[in-house]
Image (cartoon, rainbow, N blue to C red; front, side):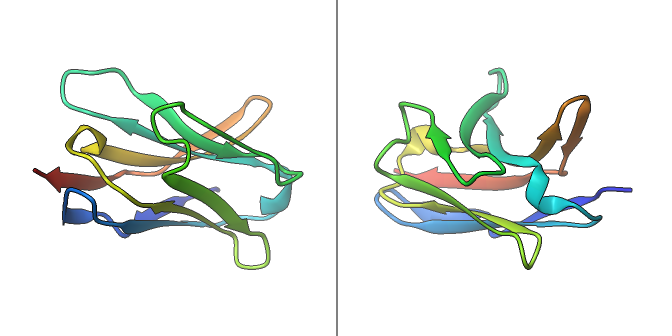
Length: 115
């Protein structure tokens, strides 16, 4: 059974940085697309960044040039390096693991950016 555990969230001032980590259990990690999503209060969950099994990446326009997604297949880890954080980045950030009909989510980690 796949489990995803996020860590690294917290409170940071505008302009600051945070690094989120997601540890995945189970096998065949490398064949899955890994993504980070976020959900702010009163808003729908939205894609932040995704990296596929080949290592290519895609970002939401709102985070391009500020956030970087990376993965370490040897450690079953995916990371989200966030820089130049803004108050509008405040949300619960979720790790996602997906391949075909297989779709797994972590419990989320809170990121709060103070102005």
